[in-house]
Image 1 (cartoon, rainbow, N blue to C red):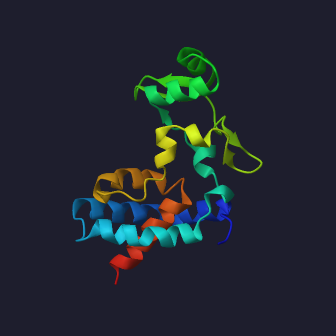
Image 2: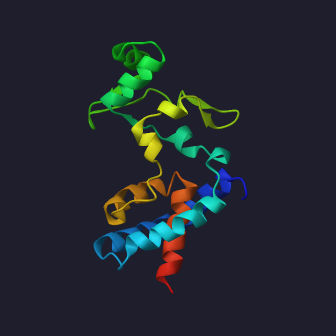
Amino acid sequence: MQPVNLRSFKRQVKLNKRRMKTFLTKTENNPPRHLDKITAALEPEVWAEIDCLTCANCCKTMTPTYTAADIKRIASHFKQTPQEFKDKWLIYEKKDKDWQNKKQPCQFLNLKDNKCSIYEIRPLDCSGFPHLPRKKMVDYMHVHKQNIEYCPATYKLVEKMMAKAKL
């Protein structure tokens, strides 16, 4: 497994983003038979090639949304009230009605080793990312359209799906 080279990844995205998004839209509108089985079979191949700890681009460039349960759980870990936690770390995004990080990269990311300092209690949004193995993959196509720009694992899954579709 090679470390993720973010510069190279960004170049690949720039070259292939439009084609990949078109593929995902077509797949969403006309899903192939056994799509869920196909992606479940491809996922281990993706993780054999991608090591998140050499990347952490999601934590560096995106922000999770925090549920009320996330806020309560993480605030308790820091011995804060939910309000104290929100005041210190979060901002309320009025448009989407979501609690999000005030800054990027994520305040809980250790930039020396790309590890999350609250991994065991991280937000639900983080624990599910990049949402590769889904029972109804077609329902996540819109998510993958966004994530191919940020996540090498998502990019790799879509690349493998496209190669499989050409067979």
